[in-house]
Image (cartoon, rainbow, N blue to C red; front, top):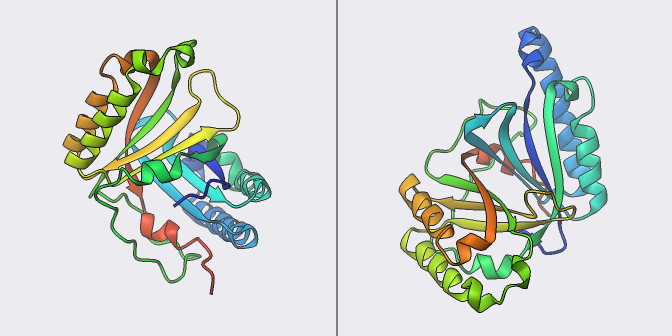
Length: 243
């Protein structure tokens, strides 16, 4: 789980069509070189976590969303620089934001059904066949207040009622995870990003329906995507653990 002082790389990624024009043995060689490079960066800079989520419906070249956490800005910068390095890098689609964890302790208290413990891979340098985990559904949420909404009285916005509603949905539908990230450079269409995980699609739908209810829902702009966790056992093995 995040620390408030961490630097988080939020990464919308995928592969460009030209990747599939390469011979299979060339792809394998480029991929192995890339894995070895990224593992070296992870060790050197104390990678705290890396988690991937595969969109259920790809958005053009954007196929996966990544949450990559380091203790320092230097680690985040080194990761981004290594990720786009040839020969693997030019064949990828990259859209990065840098962020800080937001309201960590508060949101942690909302979780009513913690995620299952992952089983680490013994040798992360040897990539197994990767696949999604299908025992949960993830909401990727990107949002911001409508301009001027921050100035509206919280009672008028219905902030307290909204928080109570969302916590009730979390309890009733077995919220497995909710994390928020505050962008260091706000974008025009969103200032925060969330990763919200439930056991089933029905549970996720209940959350989505509650999110937009008035009065609170009318004061913000939010975009949602559904995803599955991407090979969590493998990527958890990339984190260097003390001892």
